[in-house]
Length: 117
Image (cartoon, rainbow, N blue to C red; front, side):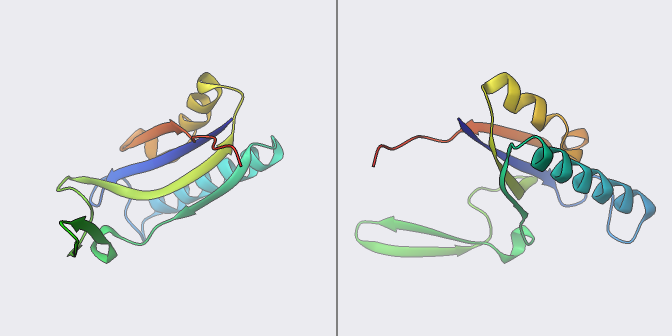
């Protein structure tokens, strides 16, 4: 079954770019990618640009409304994702615990709905 691992953190949480700690964190992501690929679990994953680049769209009463920024006002924003093939939720949670951002942010784990074609 596929699971989406959504990576959330506040912009000012965790290591900041240009610091040695940031380099260490990025090495952790490289290792995660390597391990998930080697295990045959990795399907896709990418970091996202900052929340300030987001645009949210809503359709209300036949009108399209767009708003600059993320969907909800929150300190933690979606920073990236992984799509993994996992045996079950416990397997997906095990992988989520290996994502470096889990140390200062949060990882939302959700099964992907399978739609028959």
